[in-house]
Image 1 (cartoon, helix red, strand yellow):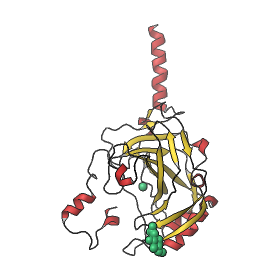
Image 2 (tube, protein in one colour; image 1 turned 60 degrees about the vertical axis):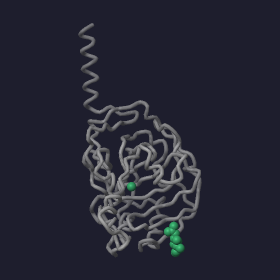
Image 3 (tube, rainbow, N blue to C red; image 1 turned 90 degrees about the vertical axis):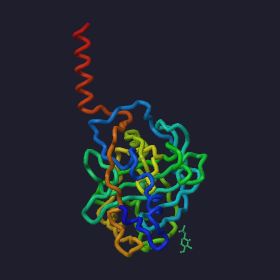
Image 4 (cartoon, rainbow, N blue to C red; image 1 turned 180 degrees about the horizontal axis):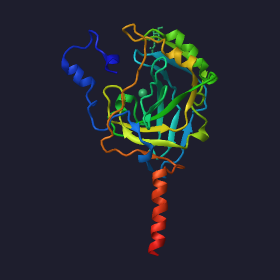
Length: 280
Ligand SMILES: *[C@@H]1O[C@H](CO)[C@@H](O)[C@H](O)[C@H]1NC(C)=O
Ligand SMILES: [Zn+2]
């Protein structure tokens, strides 16, 4: 993952490296492996309110040398979901593996998925991600896992087709007539999610992110996934395996929204009911 950020002639001394990786040794880093039998159910994790997700727009799709990113127009916001205030969407990007190898950043019970999408939101009062990254809860990322499907996900065709036009780093193209809701599962299936406090997964790894990872996955065919592996890094190599490995939890708790009782807590619940009736 560090190789994506290798310095060309623009960065010199070791202090530059220190600056780039400033927070990457912190204690609340991302991504993590989510162990579902250890999550804490939290009823404050209510459904999100999505604003402007259904609006169509023209957006710039960029090969920025370490991922593919879609710039989002203003007017797309999220609230609810136990966020303290409204956050506005700025971009989404993806993390993937290589042919036949998964590449999500987060793992669920040790399972890595073929790809992961991050919709990056920042508090409304900030003008940029770098500004928001100075605030412990300045950034809210919505993460979605992909699962391999037999048939193409037609809703992704405009994006997948556009990848051919941006195989070279620093190139861009315009996606026309797309909306954010095209790229994610139906809203009614977005009530189940995991929540924890973490960091950006790329340098400087600022610990400023309220993470939300949805249980519902996005289907994508093997053919469509292959299109991502054709993009190129600045060194000319194929842009593959662009994910950061999982980081230690260091005592952090992962919370889970509504509608979930793990087997372990079910046993606890049942035995405490038996116990209290025995006492009575
Ligand atoms: C998009 O590409 C054009 C050249 O094709 C370039 O002038 C422009 O700066 C690029 N924009 C971004 C945001 O990368
Ligand atoms: Zn990301």
